[in-house]
Length: 399
Ligand code: HEM
Figure 1 (cartoon, rainbow, N blue to C red):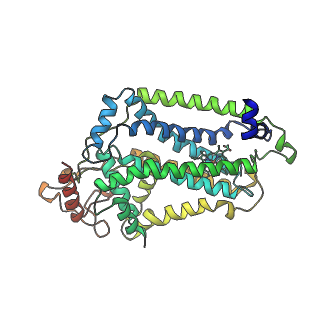
Figure 2: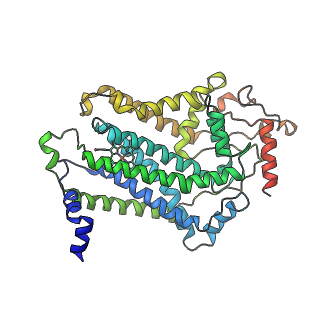
């Protein structure tokens, strides 16, 4: 039997390849990529179970999530794993990028590995954005309304992209089924295709090792199999235990069912989009476009083309002062904005801020803003009357 499989699957060749030694000094940070892969698989597995009881329509989605929580055996646990797994994936991918940047592992000949990695980052964030709407509670609904509104600010294609995402004039039934299709079909296919390509490139070029590796060190470390694989699996088990504890002891938030007529709601995105959300607060009126489009797009393009911008061969960090300074500024800015966004006071409801008969007198985002106290440092996104009217119709339809 072994011989039969060996002849057909060339197992000996595959094993010889896997047993090849890695560079010397490979440390725990080199397990971050494998942990990201483990989390992607965990998300796919837990998501597949959640999908058995979920229904992507405004009439049923919220009840389905409650049903998973309260009635489905282990439903709460699986939902918890999926929820905390998503956050863990963003953190692990962020740390993985940081490791690759600090060790200069994006440099030639690994530019394509990096580019595919950046696409994986976008896919990871795409999972987060599309998944957030699915419970169809207040925060899901309003964060999506704001998220789509922000993307519509992009010049030329913004409106078209927003319309495609919404599938109509308002966030409603079509939006929910589109987000569900993206979350469960399009993005997983894309993610697994890109991960396959990423891993192929990683194996093809071999590990870049650490900056202190000399050329002689490159094939004299521990073998990938079984040593590195063993360390990766221990890391995965530890991560799983942490996520299982979070799923058991930290409740996954679920607010009231989405009410498209509740224009008082203070929308907040998931924590990993908070830095962008916070950024918007510093660019108002004619400068809004800087926060909604220019800075995020330029940042993403710089990240994508980093290996082509930094052509030096130096990898040791203290010999790369520009890389070190730019990376530190980016990390401090992202973490700082996230903390500011998380601790910003909740928006005073319009009913409290204005007399009841003026509550619906909201103005388009680009013209005027309501008289919210500037010192409050809150995001002044407001709906247009047209939007509120449309949203009300969606609400009535779905009841
Ligand atoms: C779902 C997301 C991702 C998965 C599953 C993944 C997986 C992996 C794995 C298993 C490795 C080899 C082990 C290691 O060096 O840690 C690796 C290496 C690498 N990854 Fe990722 N990765 C992901 C995202 C990213 C992102 C977002 C970037 C960059 C923006 C990136 C850039 C790289 C590079 C350049 C290498 C080669 C490192 C070297 O040779 O030392 N990856 N990735």
